[in-house]
Length: 156
Ligand SMILES: CC(C)(COP(=O)(O)OP(=O)(O)OC[C@H]1O[C@@H](n2cnc3c(N)ncnc32)[C@H](O)[C@@H]1OP(=O)(O)O)[C@@H](O)C(=O)NCCC(=O)NCCS
Image 1: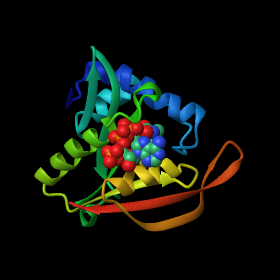
Image 2: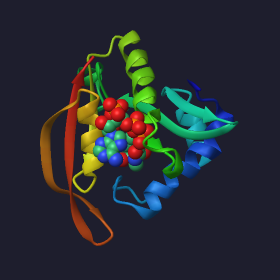
Image 3: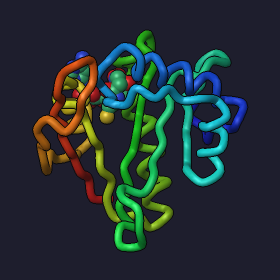
Image 4: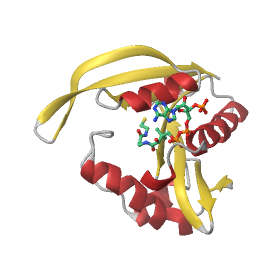
């Protein structure tokens, strides 16, 4: 079941996200999320979760792509599904709900920023209708090496 997140989901979201932050280059940050920080973010940013048998197994959120009024209608999303729940259609279902929400808010396009070392992230977004619009070489630095960032875009 996909539903809007509430602050009580923040610890479960942090657990899924922090595994990706700590152990992978799918995101370049090394700053782990806190439940308190996520609960605060939920006050201004839409978050949706997938819940299965009472457990949060994935989440998606979006925020303005870059600051300032000139970018008011362009958003960038984050989506992560727990390891054991991948490949079962949850990512697609979460993105459909997220895009519907953004459309309802009058957003014009949605951007995905994907690590160059995450080819499945690229395949996933291609399957959902995103097109690669840029590949920024060596803009990320993690685990002592450079990473490219692939930007993909979908018009809503
Ligand atoms: C990327 C991610 C969100 C996808 O979620 P998911 O629930 O595993 O994906 P789904 O099962 O909904 O698959 C959706 C589409 O992706 C593609 N896909 C699924 N499994 C795939 C695989 N192993 N290889 C290539 N493409 C695949 C399929 O085309 C599928 O399309 P379909 O619905 O027509 O079958 C999830 O795997 C994840 O959290 N990965 C780690 C974090 C990450 O990469 N986040 C995105 C960074 S921007």
